[in-house]
Length: 231
Image (cartoon, rainbow, N blue to C red):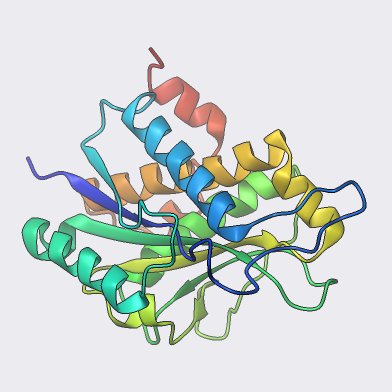
C-alpha cells in the first residue's frame, strides 16, 4: 500500500533578515527560523512515535539552520514528489506572521485557484479552529472563494508539484500572542494543529472522502485519543 508523504518546510533560515519578534521587556524573543524548526521537529516526532501505525512518512525539506533559497526548497520537494507521486504527497511550510504589532491570529495559504491543496488546507483550518477556540486565538480566513484559506502567489506554493499549504502560526510582533507562542502550551497547540490536521488529511487521502462535512467533523483530540493507541 502506498504511504502518505508529508513534506515539511521550516521556512526561513537563521540569516534571513527581519524574521524575528522584538526583544520583549522580559528578554524573550521569537526567532522564526528556530521556532519553525522546533515545531516541525515536534510534528515529525509525534507522527513517527504516537501515530507510527499510520501509513505516514515525514520528510523535513530544510534540515539546515541557514537560509535555503526558495528555488532549492521547491527542487527538494519536487524530487520527492517525482519519487512518490504527487497524489501521495502533502507539503506544509511552517511560519510565523508579523504586521503592525496589533494584528493577531492563525491563517493558512494555498496557491491561486481551486485545487486539492484547498481541500487539505480547509481540513487543517477547521482543526486549528477547534483547538484555538480554547486558547482565545483569532482565526483568520478569506471566504471569498468559498473556503477559508488565503490564495497567495508564494513561490513555495507556486513552484511545487504537489498539494501544498503554508501556515502562518500567530503574529510574533504582537507581544501577547508572541508570549503565548513561546509558552510550552502554545507550542503544544501549534504542534497539535499540524499533527491532527495531517492525520485528518491522511484519512481524507486514504478513504477518498467526498463528503464536505468531513472538513468540520471529528477533529477533537478526544476522538484521536480513542482511535489511536499511544504506546
